[in-house]
Image 1: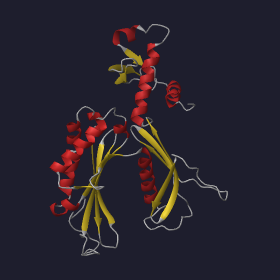
Image 2 (image 1 turned 90 degrees about the vertical axis):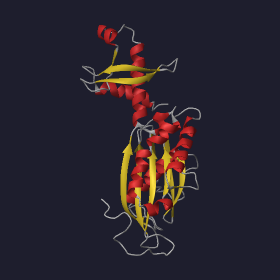
Image 3 (image 1 turned 45 degrees about the vertical axis):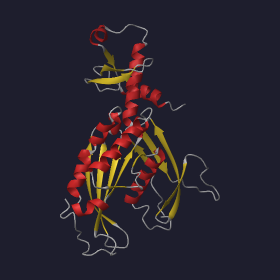
Length: 312
């Protein structure tokens, strides 16, 4: 708990007369399963801003759940921004930047649904809240998959001490690779190490040139759209339902009367209603899947291998 949001215990005056003693920054991570706000507090006791405190709050569902209701999507963030209003002192709100970074959930939406949601969010933030939109007014955006993974790489390695704000020389222990599993996509990022002189990372979409802390990093990155936890789970349910529909033999009396589908990826004794998309009509329907006396690691593993399509 921050004892005084408007002050700091590290000094009594700002390092520069042009900067406030304390400053805040707001980052909203709009993921596929929910939206989260990070309310960062910094002080200007030194020549560069120093992180001091963070307040975190989350809400569900994510923006992509409001595909046909942009205004509803915008309102869903009120609970997060109201928390920022509670934390940030009134005198500092007008100089507090805010950014909304949406991820793969919105990248999946068809047509201009994603754009409509972003516009509704930006409009509501401008009209209802006193914070300043970051990025020269372009603070509400869908992140590129490669940026999503690289930002996770920066965060992890900064916190683990392998990169720093003022590193001009590579540290002996090197950097850590990052496997970022999200709801709708997953990312891999690492800094390759070459033992042969003159070797380097080939040019291409996989290569990310990063300048951070006075150093250049040539990173390998790739974002696997559709391979996030929730999206992969949907693919599994879809495949289980499809396999049940093409079985050579007719369904059991239990399946006939109760409309259930046996799913080996559910634990024994569990039952779940899931949404699947009809292959031809593309319409959604609910299916009851049952793991009673069915749940099997081996059978589920075979289904997951098909979903992953690693040979493709």
